Structures are given as C-alpha cells and as structure tokens.
Image (cartoon, helix red, strand yellow):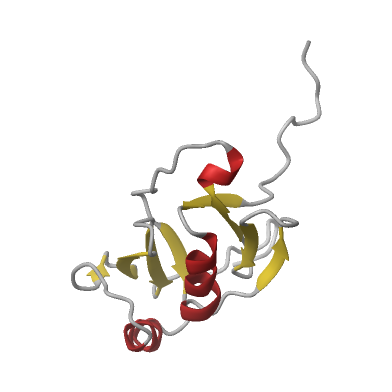
Length: 137
C-alpha cells in the first residue's frame, strides 16, 4: 500500500553511546557548552541542544545494548573556527591532527571521553543565496 504522504517527516534526534552518562554529560554540557534540555527520567541518558540538532547521550548498558563508539564525526558548526578550537583546547580537548581545509570549510576532529568522533566545522565559502524564480537578473 502506497500513500502520497511521506512516511518520514524529519529527524527528532541522533544518539551517541556512552559507557558513563555522568562523564559524558560533563563533557557535552561542560566542555562543549551544550545545554542539557532533557533527562530521560531516572535513566542514564539526556538530550543536549546544538541549535539545530539534538544529541541524545545514552548509556548503552542501561538500555540493553552493547556500547560501540561512532568513528564517523558529528560535525558541530562554529562561527569562529580559530576561537572555538582554542577554547576547546583550553578546556582539555585534544584534536587529532591539524585543521583540515577543504577549500570551502575548516574542520578539526576530536573524540568525546568514550571515543565517539566529533569535529568542529566552519564553512567559510558559503554559496550566495539563490535568486527567487522569476526575478530579473
């Protein structure tokens, strides 16, 4: 049976696994400075807000799952790349290698306490806004 309405209409959050929710909460809330918007009752999990994406941090064993770190980065947007990198280094973050310059953006990779890969990202060559259809050149 096919419907005209889409089945999937958005993403509510992404989940990051942890072995120790309290340590992860200190990192995501304290080091990264993300606001904790919700705890999952008395379970070791909570949601952190980035501005456009919610990152749910969940202690795997408390939900009957095996812990496995994510080795593909969640790219966290920053407006001032160098200031963000310096501030995170001052807070104890160790970056993996030099800043990557793709020709349109800067990225720098690091891990949370459980080894989940993260990155700060800044697109310095954003495309100009598209003209509205039917507008003269």
